[in-house]
Each structure stands twice: as structure tokens, then as C-alpha cells.
Image (cartoon, rainbow, N blue to C red; front, side):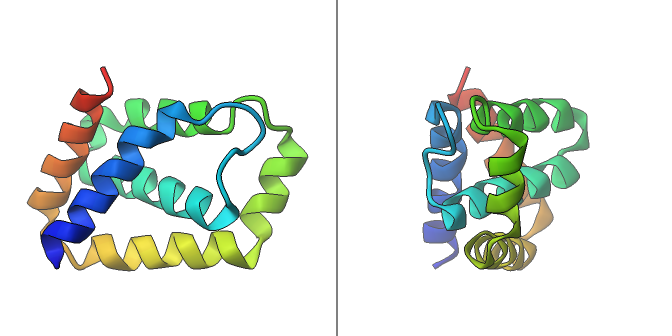
Length: 107
């Protein structure tokens, strides 16, 4: 089960840069992606700026109001919390390896 979660998490990080336009993903997915990127920033602080770049790329083209509304939604909060909980259950070194691998896959 852990491998499935980590594989899904990796897919989220790989697909995040492909998002273009006004929040092209549902709010729950947006929350999950941002949660994963925030978690990676904490697990891999040396690459925190790269994860922040991914977050900016994800919302590129969306207005501040659209972003704020999405982040205020229940779907976003539920997705964010679920991903934080899942990732928090994983060994820190495994999370860091997965985050680093996802960054490398997107070069």
C-alpha cells in the first residue's frame, strides 16, 4: 500500500507542471498537489525553491481571487489534509527520495 501511495504521489508531482491556464484541476487535486509540494519542501529543504516554483507554475494564469477561492473550498482543504496525513505516515527518507526523484523526472 505504501508503494501505491508513493507512486500516486510521484504522479502528482510529475503532472503538476503540465497544468496550464486557470486551475485546470479540481480543487481537491489542487489541494493534494500543493500539500505534496509543501511536504516536499519540508522533507527536502535544499530544494524548497524548486517545489515553490512548481506551486507557482500550477496556478499560472489563474487570478489571485480564483486561487484564494479554491484554497478556501472544502474540497481543497480535504485533499490537502489527506495528502499531508498520508505523507506524514511515510518514513522521512522515503518521502525525500520520492520528492527528489519527481524533481528529476520533470527536468
